[in-house]
Amino acid sequence: METALYIAQIITSIVLVLIVLTQNQSGGLGSAFGGDSSSIYRTRRGIEKTLFNFTIGAAVAFLVLSIASTVIL
Image 1: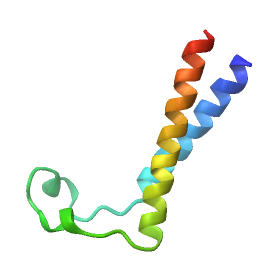
Image 2: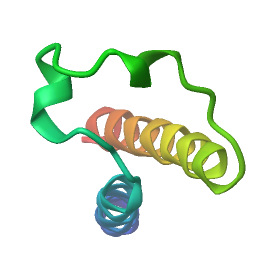
Image 3: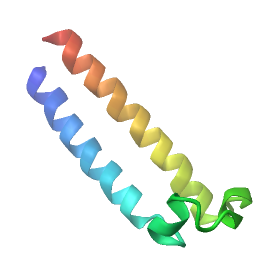
Image 4: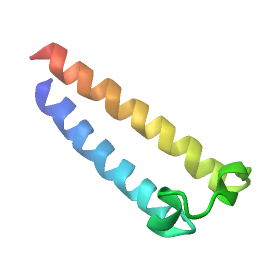
């Protein structure tokens, strides 16, 4: 049981990293420190919205698997 949780957690973490890397962020690090504020009020549409929702789902799944693997130990 523990091994299955660990494998699921590893697969979920890899999927989460790949999803985050495929998202297109314009502006780079400059916008993170206040360089470009126009991207704050953007609406997500199409594949960008799907990737965003899938990222949230993968993060929640990773969190649940992490808590489950901690509780079982």
